Amino acid sequence: ELPGLKNRQSVSVLHTKIVADKATEIVLQLAVEDGVQVFLNDQTVFDQRGIERPFLRFENITLPLSKGENTVYLKVVS
View 1 (cartoon, one colour):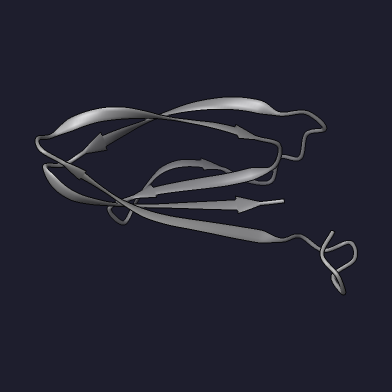
View 2 (cartoon, rainbow, N blue to C red):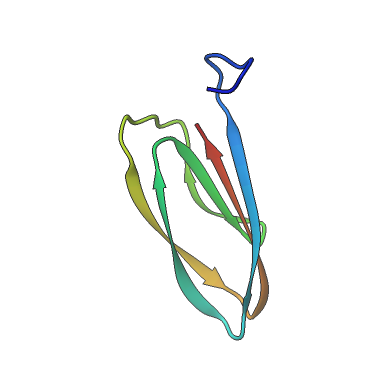
């Protein structure tokens, strides 16, 4: 719970860049309780919103990387 934001959701966003020598796939493993969205190069590759669970669940998300720089955003709602 954030100070001053009782009973309200919070959102966290992570941004990173991955440089690949060639086109390839990698697996992103997440442990989440609430909603999460994953974006790769401006495309949604995973979208699990609106589910609140009292336990962690593990998600394996395949990211098809392009040769060169790839932009990844994770948006987590809790």
